[in-house]
Amino acid sequence: MRNYKQTADLNIIILNYNGQFWLKKLLPSLKKNYLSKSKYKVEVTIVDNASTDDSIKVLQRNFKWVTILESGRNGGFAFGNNVAIKKNEARYLMLLNSDTEFLDASQSNLDEIIDYLDQHKEVAVASPRIELGDGDLDPACHRGEPTPFASFSYIIGLEKIFPKTKLFGSYHQSYKNLQEIHQIDACSGAAMIVRNNAVKKVGLLDENFFMYAEDLDWCKRFRDSGYQIVFYPKIKIIHYKNKSGIKSSNKKTAMMTRQHFYKTMLQYYDKHYLDKYPKFFRNLVKYFVLIKTDGR
Image (cartoon, rainbow, N blue to C red):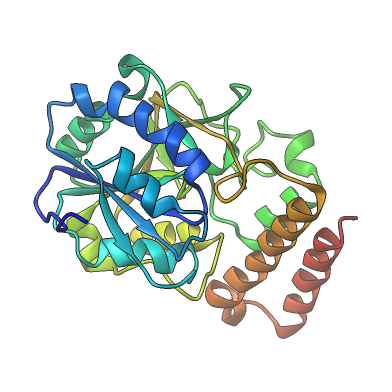
């Protein structure tokens, strides 16, 4: 196992939990389509959250150019990424899911985002355009602040009916021009580039969030500290969503993922909005969360 390097322009952090199937897809595309052509010093760190699928052996045998950190337990997304973030002195960090893939250099050239961040010191976080396997936008990379009203509009389907209106489309800010670089409230931890000196001011990911919402929470904390979050659509990355730990989804896994997502929304509400609304309002939020977790 290599020693962890601490100087780079960009350190790409990939959290792994039983994801060797996806790592074998991601890492060759990352090296061929970006690392081999980058003008910057870029390092790749893989944090393994106690996988049981021989991921580490596969990495040590086939991808000797990555740095491996073993977290010792499956403590969740924030916990695992923090293992690498704590040790990192790169100028920029990138959180990257294992179930992603880099396109040819003209489409997935992260150097372009680094250049942009070097010129815009007020920006702490930048997201590329994350596309699903069918080419559609992964809406999680283009998020608004999930205020109670924005979340309500999303849950009951008003955003889907009126996506181009600011009033009802604020959950994913779908009213904005997706072809232009612009500010957003939050993006997805599946692929986000973060200014490291801003991390040192704002702090690590909140490990109270096991999975989901830790990226929203981080973005909110960056914004509250005066930084901007930017959507950079000229650069694209593919995300085979909800498959980072498994080869294929099944109904039981999909339901568990759905339940965890909506329960985490309530956890986010408790952290950021509980003291701003009357107590009965939380019961209303919980009611809608329960409806969604029941699959209705």
